[in-house]
Amino acid sequence: MLYAACLAPVLGIAVEASRRIKVNVFVCSQERAIRHNTRALGDSLLITGASQLLTLGGRGPRRGSSLSNLELIEDGALLVRDGLIAAAGTRGQVEALPGARAVDKLDLGGRVALPGFVDSHTHLVHAASRAEEYELKIQGASYEEIARKGGGILNSVKRLRAATADELKKRALAALQQFAAHGTTTIEAKSGYGLDVASELKILKQHKELATEQPLDIVSTFLGAHVVPEEFRKKADGAKRYIQLLEENLLPTIAEHHLAEFCDVFCDRGAFGAAESKRVLQAGRQWGLAPRMHAEQLSRSGATRLAILLRAASCDHLEHVNKSDIRALGKSETVATLLPGCDFHLGWKKYAPARALIDAGAIVALATDYNPGTSPTLSMAMILSLACTQLRMTPAEAIGAATINGAFALRRDKQVGSLEVGKQADIAVFEVADYREIPYYFGVNHCWMTIKRGRVIHAAKESRN
Image 1 (cartoon, rainbow, N blue to C red):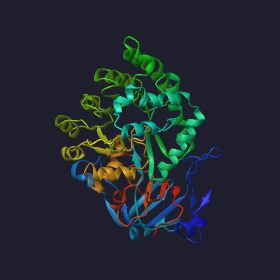
Image 2: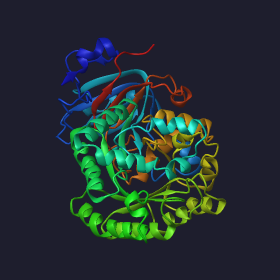
Image 3: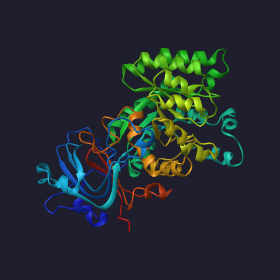
């Protein structure tokens, strides 16, 4: 356990002389995993000195023009009690509250504070990078050409099946440390690199274990229908037989052991068709798993309309939606999650039509799509930069999409995504003078501190000038 009083000379943290603020620094090592955040938190904390406090307060998901409404408070402050927000307002307003007097204090020194990022689409557990495929793509090989030769998702499947649980956990913990260091406090994590009973369960059990061994919230998704595995491809009715395996051998066990909340399908060319996807998602729902979808990434497959029909939590990618799909999303409760990191990494020119989706009133979210093949980034700030430059979203829209709308995509909007009374005190503090500088400085991590449920889980080694 470290204390901010000890770190103050390094971090520039202003600490009340008579008190010490406990800081759970998130360390990833084989010897010691950080105890996670479910133990009782009885501390109270007054956070002041935010030149801009972006609360994202308000009712419902952000749509249309409301996506840019950050509910920004200048010279903002927060009162935290038992890991939850007890008050938010100007420094004068919060300091005047009776409960703000005899508490620990943390001065942010004029930095910008906002809700911790909610990364609603990741493939957290995998065995290795696919850097060799990255080079092939640079030389002109397409995503689908690599996949047809046994690369792509099947490459990751082969490596994950051969990896031990300890190897996978070590890699995932290192990634989670980096998520926290970049301001993310909640992530969704998918299976999908196992594609057999033992390996899919290995991934989902990792999600459950990791959620108890480190501070970030992990929302688990079953993506057994990522692609048809190699051993089923040469069989007659291979896809049908594989779906039957998912229905009979995996979903019952996942439900019995509470290993996932959502069921996802990659509905696209080279993966699963709309009818197959519907079957999997309906089977998942029968076992209590809410649907979400990979939709319209490589081609228009009808996945968006299916997601809306099934009232899926989200449909993700959407590079190939048409005007009719966009209008339908604008009238639906299904979140349109955009993943520009994938398009950037693959060198594609076609990005999802963010402006049309926003103008239609769709609930637009942003996520990293962290995975070894098409988007190996953990930085939501970099995703904000891509959203601004490539999707033509404003910085305010991008932040709303990466926080409160991401929370709606995970059905966690009552707990995270905004800094409001009663929600978790999940806060990202950036060493910038204005929130617009977060995406402006692309490829640079200006996250100075990350707080999860009122405890510091990441602090920069030194303050930046």
